Amino acid sequence: MEPDLGLLLNAIVSGLLLGGFYALATMGLTIAFGMLDVVNIAHPTFIILGAFATYLLSMQTGLDPVLACIILLPLFFLFGRYFYDLYYRLFERRGDSAISGLAFFFGILFVFEVSLSMLFGPEQRQIDVPYAWTSFSIGLVDFPLRMVVPCLLALAAFAAITAFFRFTFIGRAVAAVGQDEEALRFVGINPLRIKRLAFGLSLLMAGLAGGGLLLIQPVDPWSGHTFIGRVFAICILGGLASMRGTLVAALLFGVLENMTATYIGPAWSPAVAFGLLLLTLAVRPQGLFAR
Amino acid sequence: MLSEVISPHLAAGRNPALAGARRFYAGVAAVTLGIFLAFHWVGSEYLWFSSYVVLQYVVLATAWNILGGYAGYVNFGSAAFFAVGSYTTVLLYKLGIPSLPLMILAAGGVSGLLGLGMGYLTLRLRGAYFSIATLCLAVLLQTIITNWDFLGGSRGAYIIRPDVSGFFASYVEVLFAVILGLAAGSVCLARIIEKSKLGYGLAAIRDDEIAAEASGVPTLRLKLVATTVSGALMGMAGAPMPYYATFVEPASAFGLSYAVNAMAMPLIGGLKTWLGPVIGALILGSVQQVATVTISSALNLLLVGLLLIAFLILAPQGIMGLLRRRGGRPS
Image (cartoon, rainbow over all chains, first blue to last red; front, side):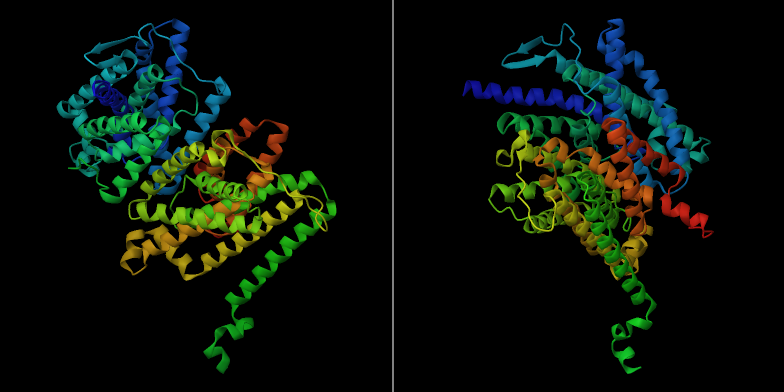
């Protein structure tokens, strides 16, 4: 029994660590899709973009990838802010954002992936940091640092963003803009300004997730595909606009996926995302944690 | 007079709609036959080979348009339906039933069922959920096929083309004729849907689904018919592919380029009519064939993506919209 218990505990703990990273990857989408109603299907591609930017800066300067990623965050924020401006001008204001908006993000996904693979080639990139392959263990359970660091990043980002939404005026405005734009106008805030800020925040989170991803696995320009299903499944499962829901759903999802990989086979773990997504959509489309 | 009252079909000559339909079918038959004979007369292997890809995109774009253009539901998973069609062919081939007509029918059946199931689970929700689910479906099916050793797994599967004799110069010409027939058939089907009650119902869904539902349009049923037909056509487009390439592997069969092209072509051509995807597929398909030979295949994918975005921004109504504006009729 002893080794089996160890296997189970390890599967759960590494599932939780993985889930932490999934939360990091999804929180940005929760802002864009859940709060702003922007179906940003290219979110995982922006994560990959973040990973490549982090890789480049870290390789050029020899900085730790986590540090390099944090240095790049303002750039991601600005990119998101101006990207939303563009999207808003071109599609949302015109009113026919449904088909064209979706197709636009799909086109963006495709263009960025092809450009990345043309610029950097199709090979996988990874950064060797000294702590990446060390791990500490408590009892039977191993904690590999390359999973622990992204998870800690996720928890820090979660704490920061939750505090921002709860305790600052602007943060509350961001949380409110998806619910009632008119009400925002009444208290004298320009909803467009808030949405720009929120989308900037969304891409900032994508960039941070990119840095985390670089620690976890080698990244190639097409790595984003397997995350599309995951992040949307988690976002919907978490009740769309709730950060806490996203975190809980991501942890649950990580454990479920890791159990599948351990007990059925790693090749089948992408099926978890799809199965869970379809199940959620068919049975409880408002998500597990809807208000 | 009496016959006109009892059965309007007998008086087809005087009914403008039916006369139009007749002219349309005659036109499609003439163009199809004309292309086939002209190409046979030229007898160029390369011409058949490259036209095959363009015609395959005509089928794929027309299929996408039945759901995306008529009903306004965006399918990101065209590659999945297409690949399932290809792999149905591989399955039948491995089972020792190498009959292309049967394979095309089976592929249509399997992909149609897939579309029906997909739609049944997601179409009750807002449109975006359907789109996300189709994208995930592609990832899931690719996982299944990659793990399915009987179909070649990740290494891929080889197909040996049968010999031909008689009228056809080579098997490539046979495949060309098959895909030409499929293209003609799907264009006719698209026009039939467009002009039927189903088409008007789908248009009502596209314009305002809640209003359509409220005025008695059976929205879910119409959408399910559309996903099934659209999926089946995509599968049929993929069925001859293994014979064309003589080799199939999951990474290329599920390639994102099919999904992007299937969507970009109708969007560039124009969404609301059967002609839009045909124009889009002919232009974009030919440009890509030329660009693949003269520039590079990676760059031509980038070109498709950029053209898609450019058209979305500058000409949301597509080429048909531009033509209409030129003709003085604002859309």
